[in-house]
Amino acid sequence: MAPLRTPLQGLWNVVRFNWHFYAGALAAGLLLAGVAAAGPPAARPYALLLLALTLLPMLVSLAATAYVYDFAGLYRLDWLPATMPPQASILTLSAGFDEISAPLAHRYAPAHLLAVDFYDPARHTEVSIQRARRAYPAFPGTLAVDTRSTLPLPAGSIQLAVAFLAAHEIRDAAERAAFFRELKRVLASDGTLVVTEHLRDPANFLTYTIGFLHFHSRRTWLATFRAAGLRVEREVKTTPLITTFFIRPDGHAA
Image 1: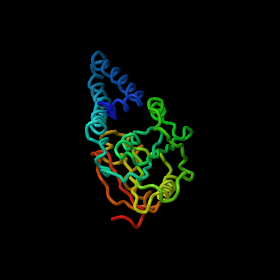
Image 2: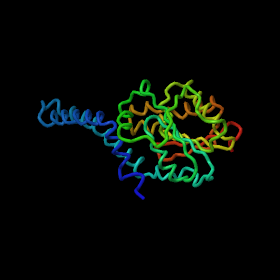
Image 3: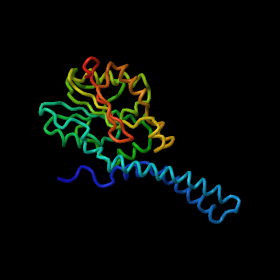
Image 4: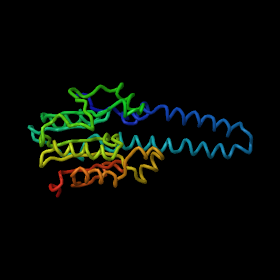
């Protein structure tokens, strides 16, 4: 069987989906390098300093990205249950780019897996998502859903729901809480909701600088879960930069 991921796929995806950022940084670096090499002597130390401030954060973020997405074992899914009952129903949630459904379908076969995608081009306007959608086809049978509407699933029908690096795209707090209440409705009483995210925390700031503002803080996530009637059963640092919350309907947490 062909591998589900190729070497350095995570790093390559980040670069090609966000190439405009890296192109801009390289252009600025070349300009500053030119000033440092051939510009006025008084300007050269400042050009070197700006060059370092331009290139160093980019190199740090690329190295961290390669570690997190390619070398830290994130996609081995060891942080998820090893098995699921064959009759289990699994739900995956994505926002335009689904990296989790295929590995989960492989891991938990023959359990039934349904993928839903809440990408809305009118609201999710990031060019990186548009590039990702062109590069990767949707998982077979993926349903398009709206975070402001009812999911097309019976109550209590899902044993495992996984939102992998996707739910942060719901930027409005009230909308996010309402969507998680809907996830609680479809979750079985003994089911688990797994939310994996970068956090707006010091580690992600040091790695991605202002890019960490696209993530939500741990406090924000906990407030969302409480507002939805959900409770964190346990919290795992899947990698130093990624946190996974294992969540149950309120009253079923250990």
